[in-house]
Image (cartoon, rainbow, N blue to C red):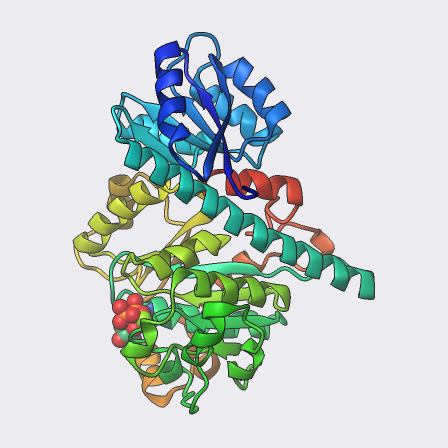
Length: 421
Ligand SMILES: Nc1ncnc2c1ncn2[C@@H]1O[C@H](COP(=O)(O)OP(=O)(O)OP(=O)(O)O)[C@@H](O)[C@H]1O
Ligand SMILES: [Mg+2]
């Protein structure tokens, strides 16, 4: 069978290796290509056999599973590691994910769990590879035409684990501010069920939203994306949320990824307004983003949810510098100090935006972003500073853009992806 999943088993106990081989022998779509007794042997065999999936024991004498996984990520990046361990502690999970493992199985596990993990990891890896190829091909084609490096936008998710903290307000004004700095900006309303971007920007066209792309995205690429985007007077190109919540149901995580990858190609900055729910489409946005602007406010519930979110993002393998904390309404005197918040979540706040109910609500009700209607206000100045920090210094200072990181270079992209597919 052409598409059998090639699996390498790594465990120091011979009986375990045999047992796993036998279990997998019953699966028509899986082929065990080898079995190694330790980390070093695993790397040698993986280099020679190029397996799709490596089942890796965590505790082995000599080179342990975590070290072997780290080395495999560099030497055989196409091999996805499923870590196996009797320890189910969060620390093992975190360290395995950081080393580049894609899944974690706690022994004893059933044969169903085993095969489900293998198939899931394999299909995610295939999907990842298929989307990396067209991007590279399109990029080199563009580079060949104009002789310049291909355009690759920085994708910025504006997220918060709690609702009503100002995500839409900040996403819209940030996009507008970046456009006034001369950047080619796309703004996506990924609050698919109850999107507010259209209201804040006074855009209300018929049949122009991501909902109109849903059918196309189910079977193919986002070919007609341009048709469904609206250009705001500032030049920001906006992809609105569907007009009704039923249509929102049709937008799955794969559709989200296709849209963002497409937008990356012909913009410099893609700003995504996210909902606070942790559903699959939102996770797809967060995965696909270079930077997650994570909003919090000086409220105890916001701080509590932020702590939980930081734990989750750690488990998802997001790098620390992917998350940037933005404290909105930072000057509100509600009894909690910024230092208390920082102490509680164990991180410094990266950016602050002042509270300015007058400018913000007046602008909202008129459908004109406050960055345009009240440019002198402190809240607009704070947004401008945020936009500058994100889009980076002028081009003379070379590649210091946030989100550019090394992630745009193919080699570093691998290490970024190696945290998680
Ligand atoms: N810096 C600010 N100063 C004053 N008011 C603000 C500020 N930022 C946001 N607001 C107000 O807070 C409210 C919530 O803002 P917004 O709708 O942007 O939040 P959200 O996180 O997108 O909420 P939702 O969960 O509904 O999507 C709005 O009334 C907005 O005008
Ligand atoms: Mg919102």
